Image 1 (tube, rainbow, N blue to C red):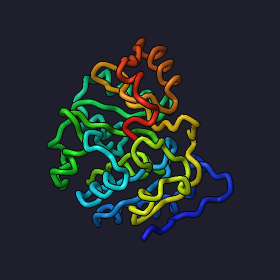
Image 2: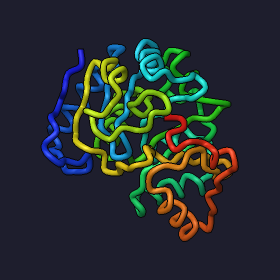
Image 3: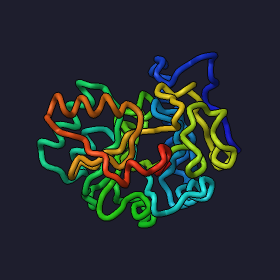
Image 4: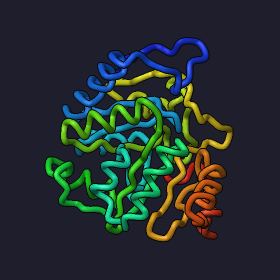
Length: 254
């Protein structure tokens, strides 16, 4: 049964301040649900997301979304965990940190990773296999207060949380709990309604996904133009849109 944790209040946005004790309590309930094998739908600044951490929950997500296992889930993290797990040169880790701390932009980092990091020790093999591809891992960073609190508490518990946009495959990201597709909403044991996503848009975009091995764009997402400008200005790095990426729909990998 799906249970609302916090009711939407009028025109509330996911970026509107929430009392610290309430945010911590809500996220703690979410993680308790995931550790028990359940699924949760939560409101992030980039879009609503559906998340899990056990094999049963991950499989339920893929079924509800009608999603191909060729599209791996992303991990909720922060730049500190990315620095520990992603195998990148120090200058690239410094870029990630600066983009978050100085530019305040959300994005996903894809890079080779250390599968032996302790945070993965308790994962069932299926979970990591369905959340990585060709030796790389996608980490969502800086996607708002709910995302950041989930990442922080998950790190504190020594667990890894994975998810994707809370919509049926290729139907476009959803920016309110009420607009989440029924099969996805019904698959959740718990929902967290913090209002309309900060970066809601008509194109159905979610996070921009950047391959940090060569700075190619895997998916064009929210704040894309700002990311392009910031990488060029700060690091003289050109984010490259390949022909294959340009041909993908805005909600690809959603």
